[in-house]
Amino acid sequence: MSAAIIACGALAHEIAELRRANDWRHLDVQCLPPELHNRPEKIPDAVREAIHAARAQHESIFVAYGDCGTGGLLDKVLGEEGVERIPGCS
Image (cartoon, rainbow, N blue to C red; front, side, top):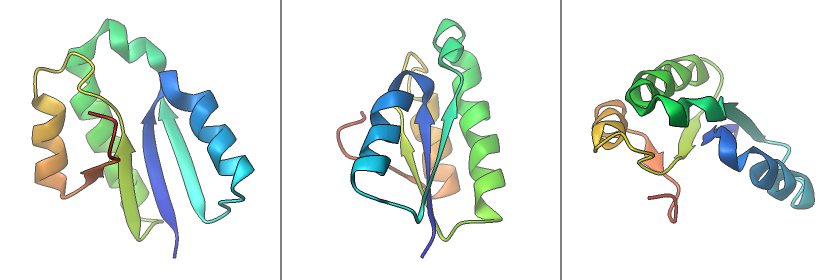
């Protein structure tokens, strides 16, 4: 089963290290640019686009992102897309 994690670029190093340390070869990690924190209103659309792209290749998709200043808009996107946030990333 292939899975994708769409992550905040600020978590890129940590998630890549977890993937390597646990030999999670089935896990594809896509980190969005950390600069999105400077423009949080762009995060929901960027995550939605990444979800749509990942659906073509993966059976499961998860998001490793906090609200990051979106004022709940990221949660709305995740609900509309039926994608779960990894616990601890809220």
